[in-house]
Length: 117
Image 1 (tube, rainbow, N blue to C red):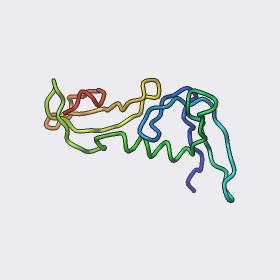
Image 2: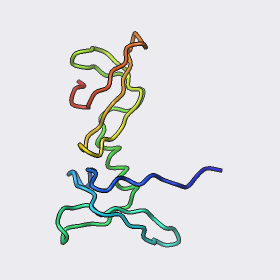
Image 3: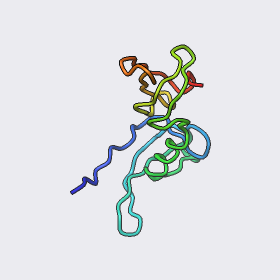
Image 4: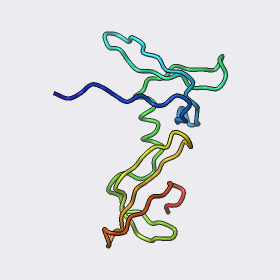
């Protein structure tokens, strides 16, 4: 049986929402229909905070990443590489990739999305 547990996003982490980066200010569990949903408040000021569902934030992170696992990419310095792992860095609000050489699997590189062409 699959687990229904999810790891909530960290408080004060940066997440994409509606095209901008927002800081998570507070977490809450709310009831929608018959299910309990995990939500996070985003926004700096109290009057502009919005309660956002965990899955909506996850979709925003997914849309923000340009490359998927398995894609062949080109690094500015290391040349052609293949994406092995993709992670979201909450402290910085950007995507971080783990790459291996397209022709040499022993070559391993980690970099931010801005370094890829």
